[in-house]
Image (tube, rainbow, N blue to C red; front, top):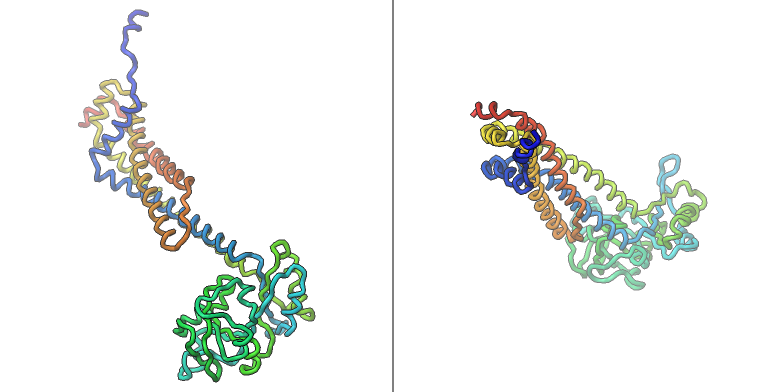
Length: 402
């Protein structure tokens, strides 16, 4: 008895190389169907990698912008009283804010009401194009950290004469692209001496025509009351300065003063983008699920079509576990190929987006790995039922169905 057992052949084995070769035979034999099946997987992985990559690039660019602009600027503006009437900041509020401990620079603009800026005097005065006329102090650009795109900023001479500096949006709406042109402001011509670059922390300046404080008072009936005060302080002093800013700007009515931090709006964009990222990741997961269903359907059809092959292998000694492993491996390979294609396309989308927007190219290895892992896991899950069904077929039943 013992000798007879020793003479039995060794159990059937399936080496890894043989398993991979067998798992790819079905894919090679039906390339069209395999391509359609892995397409859903590729789309899902592309969406996931692209969303994570684009989000990382956008956030890196926004964080870099916030860092360069600084988060130490606060703005002060008048609010409304209990009756809903617009209040006014005191004329001396700018000087008072400048005396707060920790304040490094302060400037202001004042709205010049009752006047519009037009390209010519033939344009209807009611057609303002959304351009505000603002009286400005000379130190405004230094406080905001702005730049002059063309021409020059106001100086002690030009602030007293009909000279105007246009924000980037205002210049585009008026059709002014060179300095030296004239615009009709109020009831007289003003010479454009400068065009500003974009100011992300003060978008209201982008849509404004800026004139000197003295000329606004002398020729445009400007009251001298600031409507927005811009203040920069040391980073460590921002919280303490903010706590006393309203009471300092308007000691009599601090409750009517609005204090804000412009960089908070940029920071909020990060949270908003994260919410959209979750939405698109969900859509990518849905596409991945649909791809998994397609793979499962393909594998079920493959089992039905290859019953003869399954029966022959079982007759030659293949175990149920080996048949199950073959079809699971085929499903995983099929999804893995889709995952690789999806990752490549997703990376291409990320790089193209970053280069087109002049953003840093940020590729997350974790996102790439997660995309590939999700594809393979989806393939394995999708192949569980077809593999189990193939393994349950007996040799006689499989061969009889041929």
